[in-house]
Length: 137
Image (cartoon, rainbow, N blue to C red):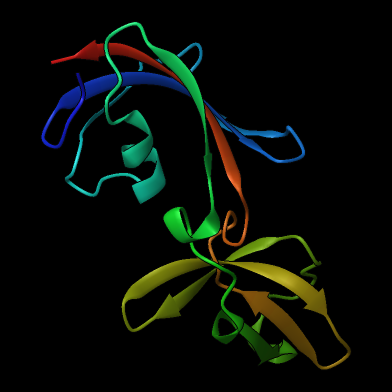
């Protein structure tokens, strides 16, 4: 049975509430991790607790147990001349921060500025994971 400190291998499919798949381990090696080391979002780790090899289940994870709520302080309006020419809404850019590079999404292109979003793409979303435990080491 999976508990804190268990090393596990899990196949998963991650979906949004719209049923859109955003990630899956199908056709790949199963995800391998040690429960409690903080390698994954908290809701995923909590979701596998108590499962055994061969078990399957679907878990629903709220934003506070996943990538957090959308933070307004991570939305910024930048002067257009500081952004590469020809960017359009929906594009991903890399911004330099004191902590290193971070990916940002172009939310809106205005006449003299561009609105960029540094939130994780899955922030603010409820996530659904279909899990299958392949192995508990």
